[in-house]
Length: 215
Image (tube, rainbow, N blue to C red):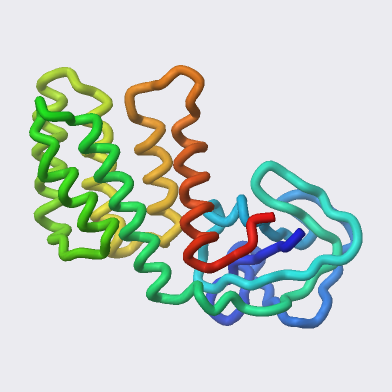
């Protein structure tokens, strides 16, 4: 099993503020969110995105939780160089594309989904998109959807407008969260956890883009 760790610039833990290195670190006990060395599996990565991504080696027993793993002994092995400013930008655009796609599908032809769908496609292909115009479009469709009682469409258009505003100042991880919440806000499908499906899509995106093994 390969493990990973997202750190702030300079190899610092986002929550502990402790600096990691290639030397072994040890903790006397494993207590989730309080004590121990918290690392990720590939499937956990979307929840913990930050500036730097490192492959981590662990030694000894680990406690596997739903979205993270806690070890008593660990060290950095190598930085994942592919996770850089360009990759972060691409991830943000990919999340915006997903949110725009959700909004377009919920709006449908009755709410003129064409411009939203076209924007989603351009974002996914890294084509030119005026985000200010897209935000205005999303707010327009949100208002029209609300007036027609189309709550799922209104929510998704609102998420799109919010996500565009967040690109200026919020952490990259926040865009992944909003994309998952937008998926969750869509018209329900029996037996489908749209939030989880969206997070799984993000895992695949990160794995493919960074060429990470998933086994």
